[in-house]
Image (cartoon, rainbow, N blue to C red; front, top):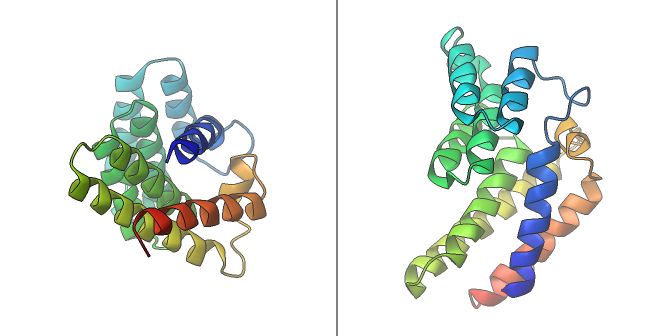
Length: 175
């Protein structure tokens, strides 16, 4: 699992830093502003800004806001809060590849932090499920997706990375 850990860390840095890079994403300015606040270390202000944006519109229009809030929590290592936001993102749009991607990353991180073998296996199973969902969504026509472009990665590279994680997790779970 050590190779997987290094891969998770490398990808996390790339993804968390680049998903909302200015000018690369069709994200409303107020969400870009919130992400910039977070980059400046103003975590609470960033969360409040996004919560304010979400309060002003119906939940069905909050997909990007939920994803942004999940990323802010992820960067702060608030993994339970991030998981909640990524799950809410998926309740709005089941086909959001980055929400699946980050859920998989978090479950793998949680598996690494578990002393209990059963709990670790459950986290790995959930990571595997999330990676497989990511692949299913990414494999659909038209999901070249701004998400892949926004992280500065080619879709093929991200898909290959997911396949490697799946292979490793299946091996570790005895599948």
